[in-house]
Length: 122
Image 1 (cartoon, one colour):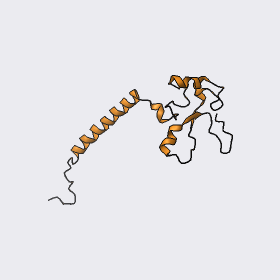
Image 2 (tube, rainbow, N blue to C red):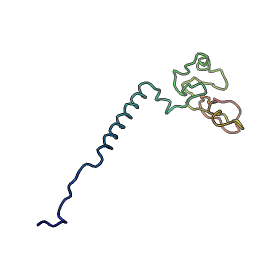
Image 3 (tube, rainbow, N blue to C red):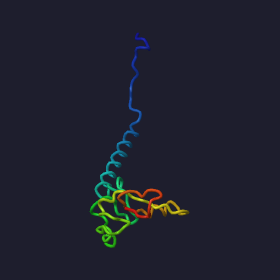
Image 4 (cartoon, helix red, strand yellow):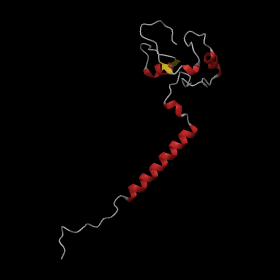
C-alpha cells in the first residue's frame, strides 16, 4: 500500500470561466487600441495643445483658417517664430481663475517665459 505522503494530488482546472473572460477582455482592449490609433490623433498624447486645439511643434498646424495668419507670421512679438518651432505650451497664471479655465488659455511658444522677464513670449 503506497504512503499518503508520496501521492500526487489529482489536478484540475479551477478558473476556466475567468480565463475565458480574461481572453475576451484582452481581445476587446486590443480592438479598442487599434481603433483609437487608426481613427484618433496619437500625437495628442505626447504634444501639448493651445487654446484652439492646435498641436504645438508640428509644422502642419494650425488647422483653423483664422489661426493660419499667426502660423506663418514671424513679425508678431508674442509668437516670433514659425509654428513648427513652437513646441512648448505656456499657460499664463491668472489670479483667482479656476484651473479648468486656465487650461483653456494655452499658447504655443518657443520657450517658456522666465519669471520677472518682460511680457514678450516667444
